Image 1 (cartoon, helix red, strand yellow):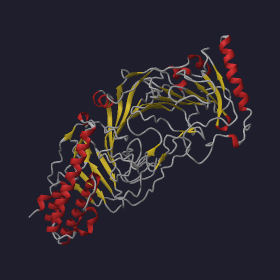
Image 2 (cartoon, rainbow, N blue to C red; image 1 turned 45 degrees about the vertical axis):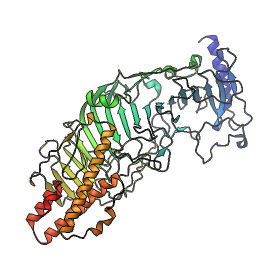
Image 3 (cartoon, rainbow, N blue to C red; image 1 turned 30 degrees about the horizontal axis):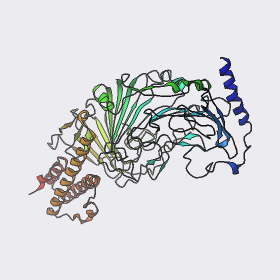
Image 4 (spheres, one colour; image 1 turned 60 degrees about the horizontal axis):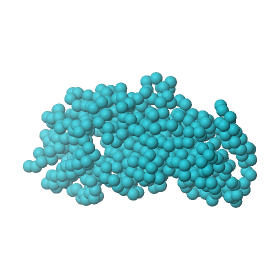
Length: 585
């Protein structure tokens, strides 16, 4: 280490070590006004009134390149002026191209154990940050970290991570209302993240969640689709990334009904798992200015020098998934009770016990973030259907082509409401789902008994006693289970919108025919008046389905009362064949 570096090191480190020993020197009256108040901690608190930061001119050009200061809890901080616009007398750096180092454990070192850092990067020189990298070297499994995380602001709203300056914790899931997250999850945005300290990462151009993409197709500042691709190496944890995406989850707001106070309303998710695809040719270069001399004071300064990141972007992620990916299985979930307001996806059900509930209890909702009751999951465990879909005849809904089986836990009124509240902080010692799990609930099970890719057997536990009181075989009814296959690799978001609208309209049209049939059969459908006037696309989908089901069950009841077995079979065939007109005399 040369004399200049040694001199600079002691000029920076020793005052901070001394400062750490003087905690409490400033009274609370001199603190920045929003220190530890109940208000949202949006910004880094300035030093106490009366405290004079120290500035250092590293390149001898007459202006400072570093500010040494303190923030809340008398915590030492260092600002590095990467765009050379810092002035003598400044209390802080800026958030367009500067770097902030936080010596949380007050040991005089930066970016070592327990410390954190933010670096803003203005890639196009317009004076506004386009990227932000966040480093948190908290020990693994603690409430804070660790994190190595890039956020890329594609929609230019200047929103990045949300950091709680009272506790020095990344609180990306803090929100107002049900789902207006302070983190930049809305609109067109990207983040790349690894839960690791940078010294565990062999190539800092790569990440574990690599990428998490948020698509805003209609440019309304809200997200219509998400893409999560993860690089999960086979020899983890010895190697953290290997340049292959082996997990992809795609989630869609099919009816595009997100809006203020309903910022997230995903309806369907599809997951691919397997060998995946190599993405090392997906290089994103950018200009990253930095004061190189300041690297000396950072334990692992490699992240400061990153000028390219490697990940599938908005234009290539879906194409690589469908055309380059090698997948072993595909999982599908549909938010039937329309209560999911999570930022990332409708969480998947696992192909486990139909009736067990609670996180990590071996049931469909085994995943900590799954809806306990209310979603419909389907599983293609050999990838025979390649993630494609179809609209079934038996219920008019979207199903996963190639699924061996599936199940729907019914929660008509979204009593087990799946808003945010699954894992407020991923590193809490015990995860709490915070849902109103209830029992009994109705369960429908679906099977593809002839392995042709289409469901042909439906079992119904309507009374919730965990026993199926009704089983229907489409083959025994003479109904052809085959349907038109929807190739998702050829679909854009507008095609999903068209699909959902046409599906919802078709279900409602069938409901109107069912109402007409019910009237002719002498059923009083005024009992179901609540569902007769849908006011949205989703209500057409939901009310249309349930009107048909209630009328179907009432017609069966009517036929059973007169012991008309022929009529019972005709009703089954009309309902599960999607052909109510067959009952018109």
